[in-house]
Length: 376
Image (tube, rainbow, N blue to C red; front, top):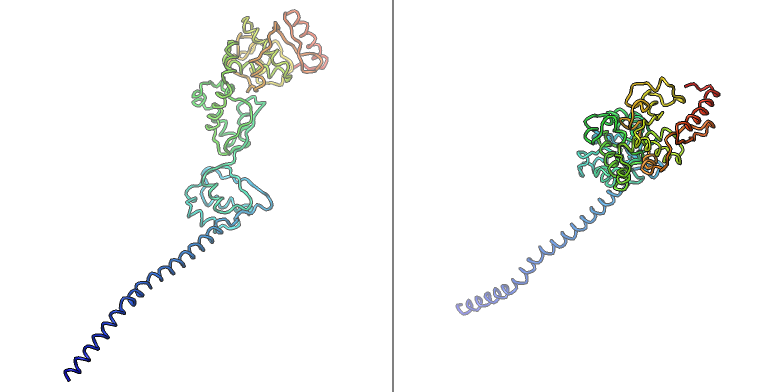
């Protein structure tokens, strides 16, 4: 029995040893299986992520703007507007076709707390993402502001306000603000010289004060070294040049006569003679429509009465054009001291060197006015 028992024990040990020898492959298989699972899970996750990415990309590019056949429109967002008001503006004409998407992305991109006033170009077929990026960046479409042939500050305010958010009253308040005027080195009488008639690009929500700042920059740019040198050679400041320019522009609408008339006033200034400019008297009287200046008009008490007071008036009687300003800077060199409208109604003038010659010209003009029964 003991022999047989020993044999059985030995057989069992052999089986056990064989079993142990098989343990390593089985354990290794167990070790490999989790890694395989991870690979499968990672692959599925990647596919899901790619799928979500492709869906999100398509979602972000999906059009939400329909301009009803137009390629572009302008969206005006008034100063102080909030997100809800922007939504209403977009929906007013039916432009926004997916408000839910616009609101969802606006929340994600934090546009709801970053609304910027202004004038924005909206393109047909825009996605919510592109629309929000444009509005949030404040990337406005500029407007053109043009002004010319302006006599008064209220007229200037009216011109400027036509294409800006600010109304004419807001603009006029800034144009006549004494602190702002003095800040830029002008007075209430000379401030018209700061404005150079032209077309300017600016933001729609430009305020009156910002407009003043812009005009001051343009004024400094306009009076470059070349123009300053010409003014210096005439013994004039930029404001004085603008003042003469404003007078000659009221004297004639004939461009070729501007340098000649400028030369007359410069000759008079050099000789210490009163300018005796009818436009300054009309300004003093507050009536530019007068066709005839009477002797009693020449007695009106005003610093703008250049029949009564020598030298230039306190400031421009209107906003002088670039053409008029450059006509002064390039004034004709001649000996004329007098001018008078021609009696033929052409709008042109006769020029004279002597008072006697001028008196003859004036008599002919007055006769024509009498003939036409123009007494004022």
